[in-house]
Amino acid sequence: MGGNETDRLALLAIKAQIKQDPHNVFSSWNESIHFCSWHGVSCGRRHQQRVTRLDLQSQELAGSLSPHIGNLSFLRELDLQNNSFSNKIPPEIGNLRRLQVLSLEHNSFSGPVPHNISYCSNLIYIYFGFNWLVGKIPSEFGSLSKLRRIVLQVNNLRGEIPPSLGNLSSLQVLAASKNYLVGSIPASLGQLKKLTFLSLGSNNLSGTIPPSIYNLSALDAFYIETNKTRGSLPSDLGNTLPNLQIFCISKNQFFGSLPLSPGTVHRFG
Image (tube, rainbow, N blue to C red):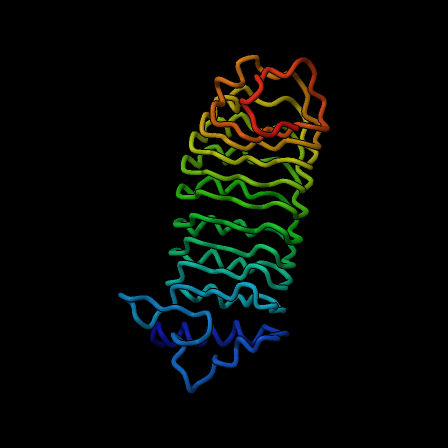
């Protein structure tokens, strides 16, 4: 079977798992039109009959994501955000070695985050926020060296934050607020020199903020509110975090004075 036929059959299998399509998105997915012209489907320039992008965001679709998604071996972008997809994220996504963007935010996906997404070695963006995902953040994510953004907020994730995330030297955004994460913030996150946004609020985190975090000079937003974090803040915080605009630490167990001078931080809570 040729690669283009593999892609066509994979798309039809994806269509077959859709239970609600109020905007008739899939009406174009038929034999009278080449699949590269189907709604939401883009094919490559170099590999002209291979699917490189599937964009079905904000279409009020309901159903599950077919495991056949893993057969779209040239896929670089998968955007299903803002729909009503449910059931598990198929582990077959781990077959997509060219995938760069994986956006599943604002759906009803449940079950664990598949560990073998770590096989998608070209991933740059992971958007899993606002679902019903359970289990732990896979430590294997620490091997995705090109990652710039991990968004996991508003799920039911538990366990500790994997120290391996400190290996992600290109990471700019780590958002995991409103879960059930426990333990301390790993000191290894202090290695993320490009990190600008760190959101860990509304979890069950404890312990102190590692000193290494206060050396993230690119950081402009840090949310740690509504946890069980304790300790005092370093007196030179305004110097070590010169770009900090938002520092949200309310509803924790901090003590001592606030070391920031007025004007250093635009929002402090």
